[in-house]
Image (cartoon, rainbow, N blue to C red; front, side, top):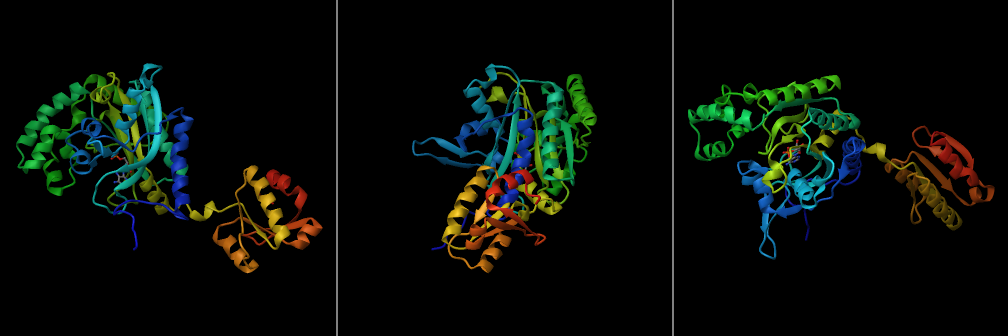
Length: 420
Ligand code: AMP
């Protein structure tokens, strides 16, 4: 019998998994540097958390959740996104009872039963953060800047940042009246109308060409912002400009989850075709309360690791070859094997990446393996090297060989940091 991974899941194995790791770490580093703290969360939650939190009008909730009954008869759902689970944790453990904002981050797998295609999977990976309890527009700019720094750290340049404001309750109420009037005049099928009744903004997000065409003259939320929302949004833009973060305003930007209010943003990569959103997020007033917490505002993002990796590959900025070991040691004979074991242990303890050859591989095949594994340097130890106490280290890219005494090897390599 031959097993295959379930349809539409993304999985990573060598050599590509190295690039995946690099992308993930690049996205995480700026988050940690800004003082956000890790939360490690369950991949499944009570279904109701998502229906309440993510929003009943969204595709995610209506069509895409992996929901099942557990053995105790409870309805359980594999997390389709990260925010509501993080907030549930914050509320449950009272993390929002201390100094605000609470700043947390996380990463892992998320699950949506979507139609699989390039860049769209049923299990995918995200890095995310949430900051709860501060309305300061500087926080919005910080959150956006952190995501931007992550993409820069990967080496991406061919992406753009789109932002908008979805306003506060007052702005949305005023807009909703006119938008509903506009939508009432459209000829819509039943399910689309039902979606519009729950959240009319959804129609801006509809992928069907005919709906897009119908919505071209619809009233735009940005024109209805309350004074407070407008000035908040202006401050966010000012901070971004001062931080030299390029952005454009996309007044039709609606995100796939219902909870967003105020500043909303998306990073879009030029080279990814249909699934071009590499990350996004925004502010959410009311979500904490919706799922049983204090009335605190929050802001967060979710960055798709799979798509950031595809973007990095499209731009040619991550190479699996860059992830080889520093030194590949090839022992010839039993005495050399023992020496190799000791040496690799010492060198690994001093932080170097060392691989050794196992079994009785002929030298030629061992050299091939070193090359295949992307080793930067190769060291061959045989009886004569042990006797003379001198070894040769060969740089794989140039073929240059350098003689070093075995006793000083560890110290030399540490000092020289591999530029022999
Ligand atoms: P969202 O939670 O929908 O705002 O998604 C945030 C980011 O996660 C998106 O910008 C994508 O990069 C990524 N993402 C969302 N859904 C998928 C999916 N089905 N497959 C791969 N990446 C996804």
